[in-house]
Length: 216
Ligand code: BMP
Image (cartoon, rainbow, N blue to C red; front, side, top):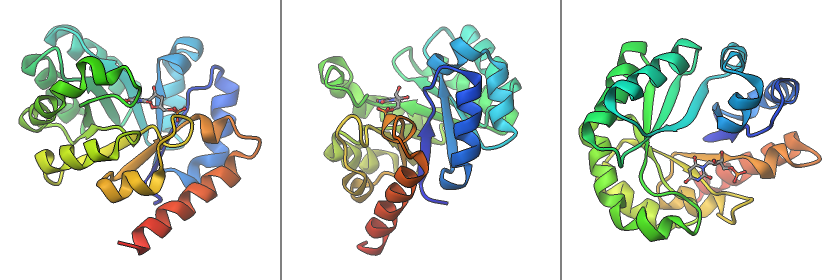
C-alpha cells in the first residue's frame, strides 16, 4: 500500500476503533502496544485485526517459555506480527520465531531504538542484534528513522529482510531519509493520531513516500 504503519498509542477502545476505521486505507498495518492494550484489554487486538493487519508491539523480552506464552496470547488474539527484543538472547528470540511461524505470523526484532538514550547501550550492540534477528528466523527488524545512517548499516547486515522504522514526525525523523537509507515501512504515531486531521496527515505521508520512490 503506502509503506506506512500506524502506531496507535491511544488509550481508549472507541478512539482506537474510530481511528482504525478512518485510517485503514492509508496504512499497511496498525501497531498496537502496551498503552492501548493495557487500557482497552487484549480484545482490542481482535477487534482491530478484523479491520487491518495488526503488529503487536509488546517488545517481548523474557525467558523462552514466557516469551512463548506471551506470543501465543497475542497471536491467538489475532495479531499478524509480534515485536521482540534481541538482548535476552538467541533461545528467547527463537521461541518467538517458532511461535510466530506456528501462527503464520511475522516476527520483528528491535536492533536499536529511536530515542536518544538508545545510544547508551543499544547502539553499540545493534549489529549483533541484527545478526541474531537473521539467525533466529525473524521476518525483519525495527531500526530508527531518527538515525538513517544506522538503518543503512543494519540493511548491510540483514540483506533483504524487512526494516520497519519508527521515529518519523514527532521524534524528528524524516520519512524520505529513512526510506532512502533502506527502511521498508515507516511507523508513525503521534504526528498522525494526534493531528486535528489524521487523514490529511496520512495523505501527506503517503505523498512523501511516493516522492521518495520516484526519486529512487
Ligand atoms: P511516535 O510517532 O508517536 O513517536 O510513535 C512511535 C511508535 O514507535 C511508538 O509506539 C513507540 O513506542 C514505537 N517505537 C519507537 O518510537 N522507537 C523504537 O525504537 C521502537 C518502537 O517500537
